[in-house]
Length: 230
Image 1 (cartoon, rainbow, N blue to C red):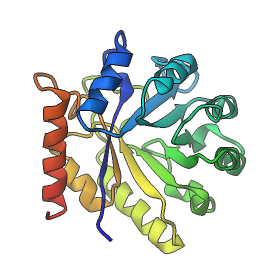
Image 2 (cartoon, rainbow, N blue to C red):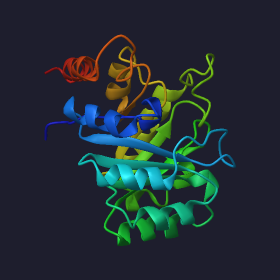
Image 3 (cartoon, rainbow, N blue to C red):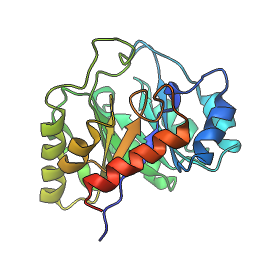
Image 4 (cartoon, rainbow, N blue to C red):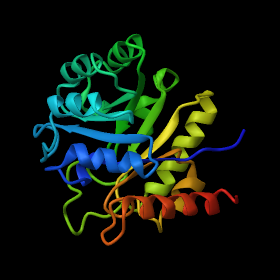
């Protein structure tokens, strides 16, 4: 089966004062998926986008909204999101006592479900629930600190992706691996080789300054094709 790598631009890297236009421009450039972060300040020092904004944007876009919850109140956000036409929801195991129950709520709504892990969180924490997941999201920077100039991809990112892929193969899971954090054109080949399926694209790629979204997306596609030997 031909391998497919998805580029999912991160909404928080867009012009937050012109989100409707930004989402439209990303779609016109050819991108089908949109990575949407819902963050509360109890989990991470950032709160750029709220539920009502997501709801209004989804009503005006045909893109697949893949929502990444970074909150200590996962059940609240999940129950609000399942009312919308959301494609997938991932939430952090670090902030969830009843991980399996949250997965059930999402899946019962007919939405793809995933678990997100902060960089230093061990894969062993999700071993028993991997089979219920459509996605495993691996953060490669600390959540909410992307604005820091010194905040780069953690040095063990590639090893963790490989270990995650090995775990999925061992358990017999078809879950896809999402990589979120400092995904640059330069590092994409290494991420793909290690086993990444979905690349969350931010300031180092799709939102690279001096180029249009179309130009940046074409560059990402070229990198992917070269990485896959096409």
